[in-house]
Image (cartoon, rainbow, N blue to C red; front, side, top):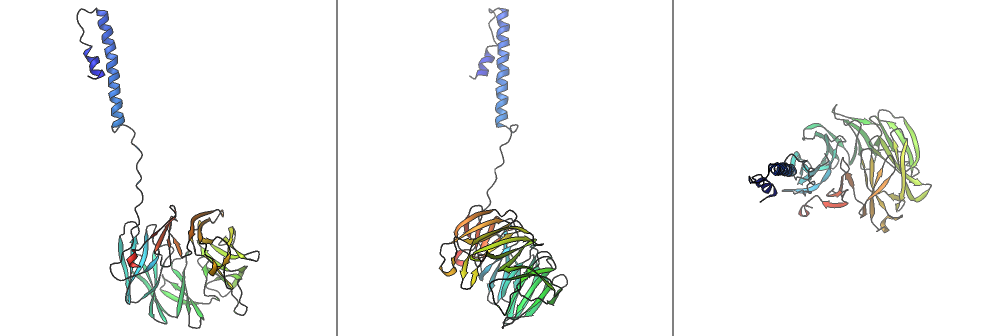
Length: 388
């Protein structure tokens, strides 16, 4: 019998008891009954819906689903379309297919088929268009721009032995193209997707970086006096006039609303200085790292930017000749504004890198066939082994 039931039975008293005793027992019983009722209510509150619900359980993100190719040969991943989706190609003899693939669900969709071999695919900075370079013949390339669904927006052909291209991050309608002949002379062109045009430009150097929607920067190398460093020059794409901005620069690379330069540290050839600047050439931050030499040249490790916030790069542990260095690389994240640096990986290989828009993962490898999960410090395969 429960406590509450015992107290209820006490209410049936014998007539021999005095009235005073009866009322005392009755009052005491009522107090105990109210206490039992309160206990019952509290149990309902603890077990029922009225109680505060526990915090929602956050489900962990799904595991990576490796790419599986049913027919054809995996050619490579070309970059990110979102935080979870990438673009890859499969070759089938002379033809090629382009797929969009979700890394976490394995869901994929065929968006474009080319009857010509695909040389390269470039994703626009705003992730809305694709630039597809296919080979018509040894000396002719076909340049096709599509939307995300594979619908053709523009197509142009160029005669060249080799092509390089740079998409304008400030105006996604513009792509700057350098076409090389067999003797490595070159011509520069501006492809305008909106106008469906391809116009020749007058640029002194073929390898340029966009500074804004209408200007580029490049290194003005001397053909008569080869050197390791060159002046950094700014030029408008619709003008032949240029302006020297900096001197003694080894390499320049653009990022969103700025540029990065690499040079020597006070003429010390075993140290490289990375400097980040705005598009107005105001210094944001800089750092120096050990440098690997390659005969009379430098070996610059692979790197990538995450918007205008951080810079991920591989770094050797000490200076050395490149072909003798065997100690692995650190993957380091540098905050562009503060210069603060964080080691993300130890003893990694120096291979190409392309980071997701949110900066949580990076495609890795010469075919981007691997993925670095930055929060976990893990490297996973993106392609089933039998496909590679």
